[in-house]
Image (cartoon, rainbow over all chains, first blue to last red; front, side, top):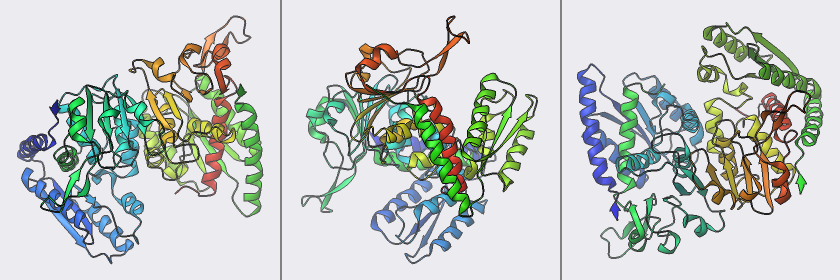
Length: 292
Length: 292
C-alpha cells in the first residue's frame, strides 16, 4: 500500500513555487500578492486564513488580511471587494467562507473580478472549468488533481466513483476526472445521499473520491482489492485521549480499508495540506496572467 | 413500450408558451424578441435558424435574423454582439454555431451579455447551472429535462448512464441529472470514447442518455429490460430509398432496442423538436427577467 502523502507533496510544491516566484520576479514580474477577507471570529476560519497567510510567507508572496466585524453590512463588504478588484497591487484575493447569515455569499462571490478569483468560486471560473477552458480550479479539487498527477495515478479509462456532489469538491472532481486532461478521461460515477445500492457501485471502483463528510463511512467490505482512495473528509470527532479533546477523521475507515488499497491518502496529512498549496498555485497563475 | 413523443410535446409546450406570452403582454410585459446572428451559408445552420424564426412566429414572439457574409471579421462580429447587448428592444439572442474558422467562437460567446444568453453557452450560465443556481440551461439538455418531467420519468435514486461528454449535451445532462431538482437526484455515470467495458455499465442503467453521435451504436444486447432511453443522436445516413437521399439516424438501434424499453424517444421526432422549444422557454424567461 502506497501512502499518498499530501503533507510531503505540499512541502515539495511550496519549494517549487518559491523557486518559480523568484525567477518570475528576477525577470521583472511583480511580487504575487494574495489578499484575504475574513468576516467575524469563527475559530475554523481564523485558523484556515492563518494557514494561508503563513503559506504566502513561506513561498515569498506578499499577503494582506482584511478582518471585519460580524456586523459589516453586505453593501460595505461588496465595497471592500470592489476595492480589491481595482487595487493593482493585489494579484488575487479570497473571501473566507462561511459569511454571516445577513450577507448573501453568492452575491459577494459574483462581485469578485474573475481574473482575481483565486478560490475559483465565481460562476465564470466554474463554467470555464466545466467547459474545459483555462480557469482557476478551486483549491481542493486542484489539490487532488496534483496528488494524482505527482503520484502517477493513471485515470484514463479507469472507473472513478465520486461520493458527494458538493460545489466545493464532489461536483468539480467529477467534471475534472471525466474531462479531457492528463488526470481525466476516466469513466465517472457520481454518488450522493439519494444513491441506492452504493456498495454495488463502490465495489466496481478503481478510484474512489470520498467527499461526503461522514467519518469512517467507507468500510473494507465496500471496496475491491487494489483500489486507489482519496479521502476528502475532515470531521472533528470527540476523543478524550487526544490532547485537543478531538481527532480529525476522514470519510474512510483507514485501518481496515487501507489494507485493500493500492494507494490511499491519510487524514490528516492527505488532501488538507494540498488545499492551501493550490491557492498559492492559483495566485502564481494570476501573477503570470495565465488565466484571462 | 411508451414512445416519448417530442414532436407532440413540443406542440403542447408551444401552445402553453403562446398563452403565457399573451397573459404576460396583457399585464403590460413587452413582446419577447429573439434575435439570431447567422454567419455564412451553411445548409444546416440556415435550416436550424429558419426553424427558430418560424417557432417565434408560432408563439407570438418577435424575431430578427441578422445574416452576415462568411467574410465578416471577428471584430465586426463582436461589434454586432455588442449592439444586441445594448439594444433594449432585444430580449435575448443567439449566435448560430459553427462560426467560420477565422473567428474565435469562445471569444464571441464570452462577449454576449449573460442576461441575454438564451442559448446558455456563456461560461457564467454554464457555471450557474453547475452550481445549481438559476440560469439559462442550454437548449438540448433543457429539452430532455422537459421530456423527463412531462412524461413523469422518475430520476431520483435511479442509475443514469450518459454516453458522451460534449459541452452541448453530455456534460450538462450529467450535471443536471445528478443535481438537486425534480428531474435530478440520480446516480450518474459519465461514459465516453475512453470508457472501457461500456456494455458492463449500460447493462446497469435504468436510464440512458445516448449522445455520442454514432448512428445505431446502442444495441439490444447492451441494455436491460425496462430501461428508459433518450436518443440524442442525429446523423444523416445515406439511404437511396429516402426522397432526400438520406435518413436521420439516432445513436440507438431503435427496432431491436425499443422492444426492451419501458420508454424511448424516436429519431426524428424525439429530442430534436424539443430543442427549438427550449430556446423559446429561455426567451420567455429572459422577457420576465427570471434570470439575473
